[in-house]
Image 1 (tube, rainbow, N blue to C red):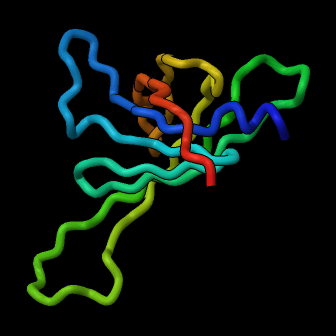
Image 2 (image 1 turned 45 degrees about the vertical axis):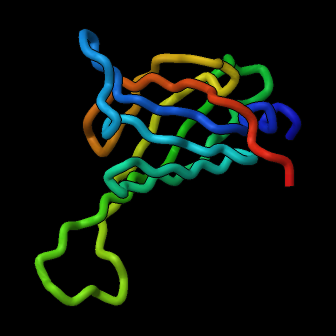
Image 3 (image 1 turned 90 degrees about the vertical axis):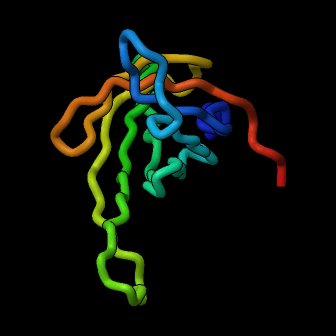
Length: 125
C-alpha cells in the first residue's frame, strides 16, 4: 500500500498540558514502519501497535490500535525469569500525514490529549 509508506518515520509523542511545557518523562519516541508502531519512554514503558488505513474514499484519519506495556516494580532481590509488566490498550484516530497534530487517544478507559510531531524518516535498509 503506497499511502501507508508515507507515515513511516520517527515521531515524538508528548502528553499535552495547556500551560506548561512537557517534562522529559512525559515524552516518548515512536517508530512507525509499514503501519507497525514501536516506542519507549524514559521510565521503561513500551508502546506497540499498528495503524489501520481507512477505505480509500474515507476522510484522512487512520485508526490507531496498540498496547502500553508498563513494567512492574519488584521488591524481590532476585530477578524473575521474565520482567513482570501489565498491558493497557490504546486506541484513537490520527492524521498519519500531518507533521504536527493534537489528538485524543484512549489509554484504558481514560481519554488523554497528546501532541504528535514528525521528526524525520527512518534509515533505508
